[in-house]
Each structure stands twice: as C-alpha cells, then as structure tokens.
Image (tube, rainbow, N blue to C red):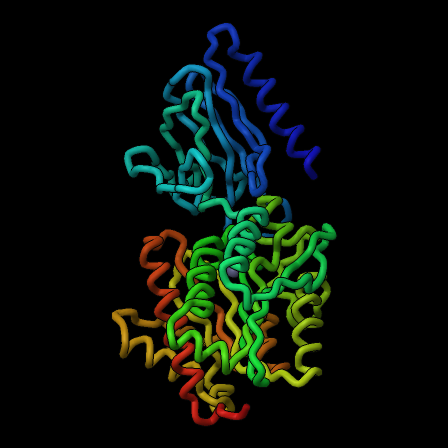
Length: 386
Ligand SMILES: [Zn+2]
C-alpha cells in the first residue's frame, strides 16, 4: 500500500516538476501521509490544475473524501478544480499547515458547480505546505496517539488488542472496568470520512465518561465501558470513502459478520457476556450530510425495551438547549445498533453528527449527551441490578 502511495506522489511530483521547472514555479502535490486521497493531477495551464479523486471501491454512497498536501518553491496563486468522476462534491475543504489545527476554507476561495459537481478552489501556494482535506485528517496514528496520551492520564483504562483488521493491524478496545455486571459499548468510525461524529464527537463523549466529575466517577463504578475507538483503521489510513480494506461497508455487516472488524466486536463482546457482563447500552458514532440526529429503535421494538432512549432524549432536552431529532429505522437492517437490540437485547443508537456543523457545537453536544446518558443510566429504576 505504501509503495502505491509513494508512487503516486513521485509521479505527481515528477510530472509537475518537468512540466514547469523552467519557470521554477512547480507545484508539488503530496499524498505520502496516512489518510491521503488524490488519484491524479492534470495541469491545464500555468496556474490551473485538475485534481481527480475516485473511490477505492464501488458501489459507494456520495462520500467523496479527498486529502492532499500542496506546496510550491515560489509563492503563487493557483486555481484547482476538484473532480470526482461521476460523483459530486460534498465536503467543504478544511485547510491546515500541520494536520492538527484546521480551518474551513473561506467562502470566497471556493465555488461549487452543483450541476457538474466540480468544486473550484483558489489557493495561495508557497514553500509552507498546506494540507487540504474533506474533513480534519485523523489517521490511525493520530487516533492512537490521542488514545495513548489519554490512557497515560487515566490509569484505570486498559488498552487491549481485540482483534486484527483486514491488513492484519491491531484493532483495539479500551476498557474501564467496573465490578458490577453492567456495561456499555462505544464504537467509532466504521466509515472513514465521518470524522465529525466518528472522531470529534466520539472523543468528546468518551472524555466525559472518563472525566473526574462525581457523575463520571459514580458511572464508572456502576458500569464497565468497552470502547472501540477506531473500528476501521485500514479504511481511515487508505483514505477510503466508505469501506474497509476488503471493500466492504462495515455498517452493513452486523448480521453476516463477514469482516474481521465486525467479527472483532462480536467475539469480544460475546466473550464478556459469557463471563457474566450485561450490555445495557451501545452507541455507534457516524456523520451525515443531514445530521445531527440519532437513529433510534423502531416504535414496535421500543415497546419491548427499558426505555433508556426516550428518557435520555428527554433529559438532554430538559437540561440543555439541544433538541434531539430521533429517526426510526427498521430493526431488521444489518446496522451495528440493531445488533445490540436484536442479539444482545440492549438498547442502542447510531449517533450522527452533520458534515459542516461548528466544531464547538459538536463538542458541546457530545459532552451534553454523554453526561445525560450517564445520569439516565444511573437513575433507570428498571435497570438497577448489580
Ligand atoms: Zn456512517
């Protein structure tokens, strides 16, 4: 895989270098980092380029992820057309010089042709490399670096290898162990581009659960927390639009369990249940163009539950300014949250953020939802077995 990406950057660099080295104005596009995606570049004239980005696997929904670096020995302005073949532009580009601090591109730097689906960017390039991406780039390396720092600060957390990915990388679970039988499960980032919910919401939510508030301490005494912080590290590192390294949509694999990533969760959680744990709640973190919302149980199945979800939503709306849009889906679909209900007999939701929601609001929402979930689960009178 690395070879492939190195070849792409070498090819792009060489092509562009020779095409304009006379003027010392060569523009260099970089795809040598984890999470990058840019399939080819075509130079149209001295200042205009077309960047082609295609999905690694099809069929795929409209999630045209792109991520690349761009620089030039001399400062210059370029026009860059982002093209996705038969797909249309979706994500407003995010810009960074260090892949840590990101800002959304200014409105006057982008024009989207809604008919052709092509986005045209006006960018100033210079020796200081700029990263341009569909969303903030969080590769497996970035997520595990955050995770290791977090674990160091909170020694009660245990990181375990829960299984392997298609590319034989470790797939981790983080455990906060309680002496009781009750447990909750968090799953993040089955879909690589879904950084707002899959990484930003998830980390803010998780950090509330492991925080030093009395509520969090009480919660951790009462519930074990099993967390899968990045279920699809291969897909995130490959810059995939949707899939794992086998070209499978993991969130359609929770009935057949054909993929190592979904099998990892199934085997791990089943082994904990066999040891006596009872899973009471599950959350699977995603992002949608029409978010934020929660996918909840359908009304027929809600009758059979302990009604954690309606109480949680009520608590969120009573104790904050957030209004929760709950969308019902059939419990027959092979989605992760349905596996919790259909097989583990526990309630669960899909937590969907929106593509372009203000990151501060994403953070506040996740913290509020986490605190209200802890309160709801601690005060659920039908749920008070040890
Ligand atoms: Zn998703």
